[in-house]
Length: 198
Image 1: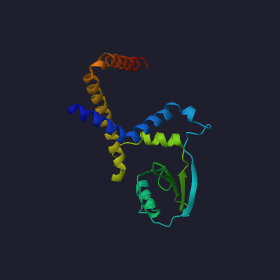
Image 2: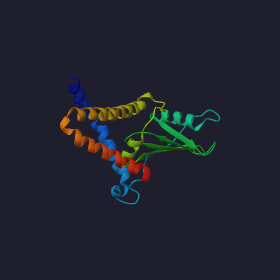
Image 3: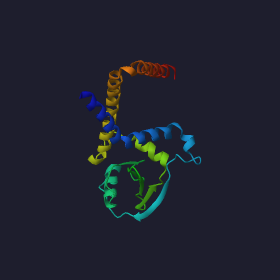
Image 4: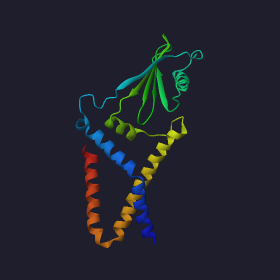
């Protein structure tokens, strides 16, 4: 009975987490073989296209930080969500990056002429895959964004379970023990070789 539960759990978790595993597989290929994914020299660079340009009539508190300005601007644009903002110094332009898995935006605010320029990142598969691969952490101010970090934790826990359940299934089938042991020793040996030589 226990073995059946282990096997079924192993299988159903694989089916449930298939999209995540495919994403990590393809994103790793995109990072490991960047030249093969480039149609031209700038294929893997982030590029933007202008969506709109408007005058911003909002008023900021005196000495407002870029973060506070970003929150106010995004709220006015109805684009609330996970973001980052920076500015070279007080009174200089503020650049806001509105994070989004598919269509990130860059919003540039120039205080001198109160101009807002909203640009959308041009979608490129390698860039998208790398962004999803690297997206992690519970540091976001918006709880819904942290659900991705939770899913990554689930993938990690599942991978550990797959290893342990794989060991269990290998040991349970006596006919596979010799070849299984050989595969495990070869895998550990190759990993150790790379660990100490590269």
